[in-house]
Amino acid sequence: MWFHLDTADFTLRSVGVAQSASPEGPFTFLHCFQPDGDPSLDMTLFQDTDGTAYFVRSDNNKFAAVSRLTEDYLNTTSDGVCSKGYVFPPPCCPTACRPASGIRGAATTSC
Image 1: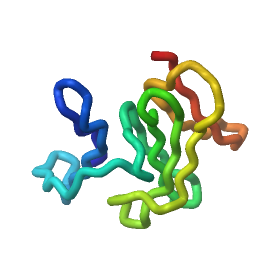
Image 2: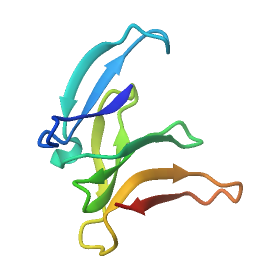
Image 3: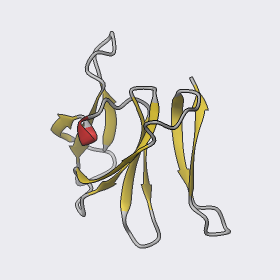
Image 4: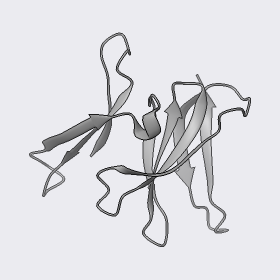
């Protein structure tokens, strides 16, 4: 399970990862970190048809970022992509999709 792990005043801006043998739990907390060294806020996970998984998130509410997950889904690899330098409204509520056309995409809403 991946989740936004933070303080009440949003100063931690990190990701928490926990795991369980069952969707109902109990869960064991594994670690807390900032993928690719950047703050992470709203987030989602996406699994492609080839089994590759990605972590899609708002990078500090300034950019959209995507990181490839490790094969066990417990961490990110160094294959991160961030939209830094691309100007658009701050990304919130990121979503990754694979429509019937097979074209992959990601969308965010404005904060």
